[in-house]
Image (cartoon, rainbow, N blue to C red; front, side, top):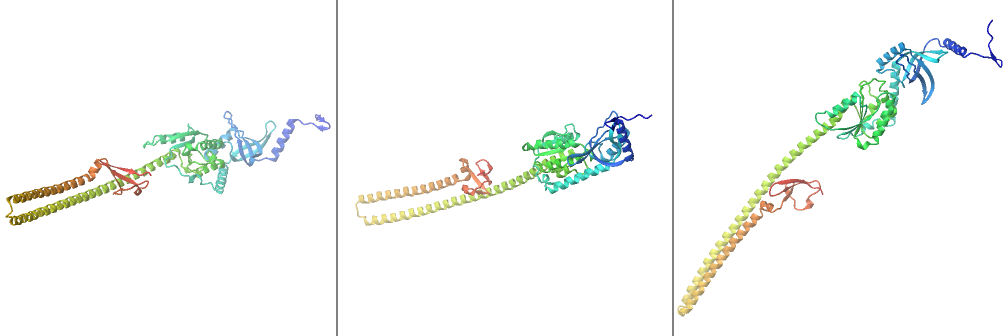
Amino acid sequence: MENQRETFNGHPIYALSEIAMSLHNVIERTYPQPYFIKAEILKLNYYPHSGHCYPELIEKEGDKIKAEIRGVIWSTQYQQINARFKRITGEPLRENISILCLAKIEYSPKHGLALHLQDIEPTFTLGELMKNRAECIEKLKKEGIFENNRKLQLPLLPKRIAVISVETSKGYSDFITTLRENRDGYCFETTLFPSILQGEKAITGITSQLAAIENRKADFDCVVIVRGGGGDVGLSCYDDYQMAHMVATYPLPVLTGIGHSTNLTVVDMVAHTHKITPTEVAYTLLQSFKNFDEIVETCRRRIADIAEKRIAKQKLEQTLVENRFKQSASSLLQKQRNTLLTISQNLSLYVQRLTIEQHNLLNNFAKSVSRTAPQHVKQQQERLSDLSSQITIHSGRLLQNAKQSLTNTEEKIALLHPDNILKRGFSITMKDGKAVMKTSELKAGDIIRTRFYEGETESVVKS
C-alpha cells in the first residue's frame, strides 16, 4: 500500500529532494541540448589541485548585474579550452572578459543550477575587445582630445623621467640598462612608479600612478609606460576609455613601449610617442640628446667660422688704420720740415739783406760824417756792432724756436701714436671695425672688441 503523503492545513507537504528532482527533470526535458551563451566572466574560480573551474558568469546592463549563473568546466575540458583560447588570443582565460560559450543548462538537486561549459569561442572575445576599442577611439575623437598629448612639445633634453612599470619586469630592466649604459655618457634621472601592467587591475594601478605623477609634474619632463610582451587580451586594459582619456589629456608627454607589435592599443594611439619595445623608447630619449649635440656642434662651427672671419677683418682694418696713421705722421713731419726749411731760408735772406742794408747805411753814414770826430765814428761802429750782435742773437733764437717747435711737434705725434695711448692705460673700443665714440652708438646684444696695449678682447653689450 502506497504511503500517504503528509498534509498541512489540507495542503500536501513535499520533500526538498522531490522539488529539486522535479526541477532537474523539467530542466532536462526543457533544455536537452547545449546553447551558445554570451556572458562575462566575473570570477574564474580555477582550482589547480583538482583542475576544475567554476566561473561566475554575469550579464551587465551598464554598471548593474542583470543576471548571474554559476558555471562549471571540468578538468579535461578546461585544459583543452584554455589551451585553444591561449593559442588564439595569446592569453589564458581570465576574469573580466566577455565570452561566447557552448554550455548545457543543468540542475543538480545537491549543487543547484549551473551552466556546464563545453567550449569557449576565442574569436568572439577578440571581437568584443575590438568592438570596445573602436567605441573608445570614436568617443575620444568626438571629444576632440585624441591628439592632445601628441601636440605637446617634448623637452629638448628630456632628462627627468617618470617611469610606470614593475621593478622586476624585463622591459623595465631593458629600458633602464639602455639609458644608463649609453656610449655617449648622457645622464638621466628616472623615478619608478610601480603598477600592475596587465588585466583589469592595471587600469586602476596605471591611472592612479599617472595621477600621482601629475601632482609632481614640475619634477618631470615626460612619462614612460613600459612592460614586456603580451597578447591582445592581456593588453585590453590599454583600450580602456578611462586610461586612454587620462593619457590623451595628460599635461606631460607620455611615451609607451608595452611590447606589442601586431596592433596598436588606444593608449598607444593617444600617447605622444609609441614604440614597440622599452629599448626603443630609451633610444628615442637618447636620440633627443644626440640631436641636441648635433645642433650645438653646428652652432660651434658657425661661431668659430664667423669669429675667424671677423678677426681677419679686424686685423686687416687695423693694418689699414696703422698704415694711414704712418702716412699722416710722415706727411706732417715732412710738412714741418719744409716749413722749417722755408723759415730758415727766409731768415738767412732777411739777415743778409739787413746786413747789406746796414753796411750800406754805415758806408753812407761814414761818408757823410767823414769829417766828424773819431769819437762819433767810434760810437757808430759800436752801435753797428751791437746791432749786428742783436741780429745774430735774434736769428739764432728764431732758428732755435723753430727747431724746438719741430721737436715738440714730433713728440706730440709720437705721443698721439695709438700704441703710446694704449700704453698709458687707455683702450680702443670698436664695433664692426669702427671706433666707438659715444654710448648711443651701442645697443644691447652688440658684439664689441676692446684693444689694449697688449692684446684685445670681445664683449657683448648687456644694456
